[in-house]
Image 1 (tube, rainbow, N blue to C red):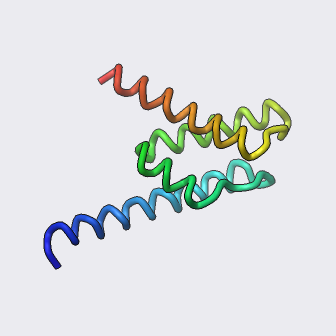
Image 2 (cartoon, rainbow, N blue to C red):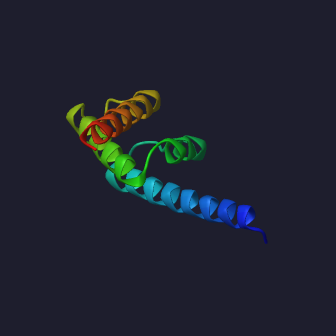
Length: 95
């Protein structure tokens, strides 16, 4: 296998691992909520690091608790994405 193929394999494995962790945290923190599509988790994995996404999922769970579960899937995904974008911007400014 050449170096490019090995790099691609490592990238695929790392993203799959991050998606698995994100899905498990989502289900753990919001057990009664629907879970976003696998595709959505892969979008987040491409755009953000794991620390950012774990923070964002946790914030989404807290927001959902505050609203007593009254968040539909679209709202949860948009809120989680917004948290991730804000957290990423904050980290970039701090660096």
